[in-house]
Image (cartoon, rainbow, N blue to C red; front, side, top):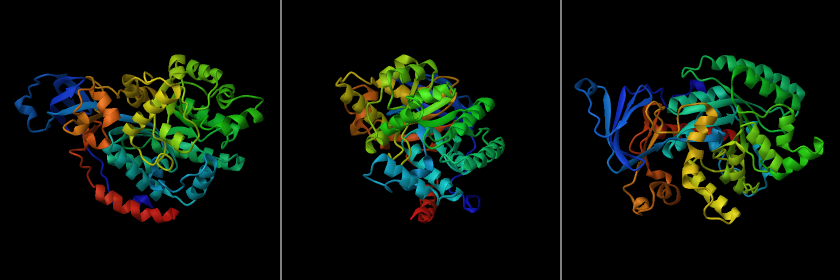
Length: 436
């Protein structure tokens, strides 16, 4: 079991202080002081007192730019060990084969798969992720050891089997109680897979459980066209969004991955209920499940729109910077308008919108906010252009421009080095035989 394995990560204690000297933020060169997991001061010429010198980590940030850490709002982190396992097949064939493979995984697999995902997310600037997968205790432990902030849900997936649903209710309650003892003070969140894979009773139960305990509810919604066609046939013409509305499941606690195949009425409902909609363009395009994501319409209706990579079994990586670029390109292309998907809104989708969905004070660089920060090295060819920094970051650079990452007030990567990376890769290779 995963608890018997050598730890290839470690529980990092928060650094007493971090001092970023001469860091560029929004075009201004300033200093930033981080204390107790928070950004305490942002100002030019901060003077440290002699008493601070013994405990502070100082980083010379000339030529570097600080941005908020990315928030990946829809992941199946442990599927990082499944990338490339099913290529060039339609969505339904892909999904049915994934479910067969998942019968062979265990907590050990999830622990090391999540480690690999966290490693990749750190190296591409992500500091928080919202995950839906199995063995939440193992996933949570892996993420905390890596130093990033996880939102891990118990995912209900009964495959329309009522006996399985009853078993999962009991398991969910036990897991929630166990999560109250997690060392970082987090709790398990709630989730169900989708309307076509979960009984109606179980979807309502999961939603009620989330509301009762003040949890987020993380689901897949309107991911592919057949989902809508089948739902209309089974539920008197209702779309998946309308069906969930009839069940009382829509609301600001809901995080809905994909939300791709939507009618005008669906968009109205998602907006009126302030649902958090997560766009996963790389996964959707690769599986040919769709690409005409209604960003403008959802935004204007009142939904909170975020970005996610989905699992690496369909998107093949956890790189939010790549997701941002692809999102913008597809929005411009299908709408036939290069002005679509402004850079500032794209940045918000990858940062502060996710923070709003999760109820955390992150996704911004301001005093008092959580110290979740990516430090971008601009001393390379991608940033030679006089174009705005964000344009060069999103359209020109790759994730290797992320030099260092601070999550929760502590370095999880410094100068492109993540501690124990080789050990993580070694043990992850060992568990791959579980699905081969």
